[in-house]
Length: 248
Image 1 (cartoon, rainbow, N blue to C red):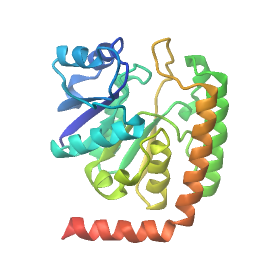
Image 2 (image 1 turned 60 degrees about the vertical axis):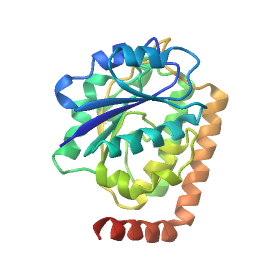
Image 3 (image 1 turned 180 degrees about the vertical axis):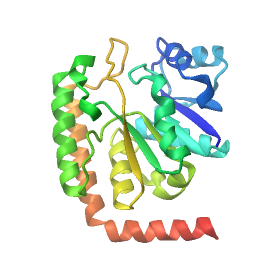
């Protein structure tokens, strides 16, 4: 299976090389970098590493960056698409564990969890407000979705090609809430989802939103949850139409 790792980059000049060098070379076919109009030399560093790179001329936001990543990876023939932040916050060494459930046919969508198997994210530097916000938001989402995930707000993910073709990610926000919209829809549409344990690693160079931005993200996540539950029939109908179109 052809595995392509995508890196949605923004101001990652100081960390992208370290991140790339630690990816186990045997687990991927290609690495693609999409730079979201960084003011630093992220593009030059990425190209210096020999990585294929595209640059947005204007900042499109975290969700907008992901959309470009996935469209590009699918156009390159990816069977499995990995989302790996180039800011070194998530361990590149965990990529094989992330893709294994998809490669073996057990899952459509896999994400890393810093809480799974007794993980203690604050020991890895997660700020208290991020810890509390993550626990609270995950708990609310689990309650309304009928799930039991240990974390629903990790930025390290892997998807099957079929999942990306069918989930309708192009309809989602260009902002940070993109991640929540995608996961909520994946649950409601019955995709096979697994989480794998990953370490927590916050450094001075890792990107981290402030308290105000975190609160905004939480509120937007709850709005997305309410909208998805309200519009579930329409979403299921659109999903069926995409499935029929893909199989025809």
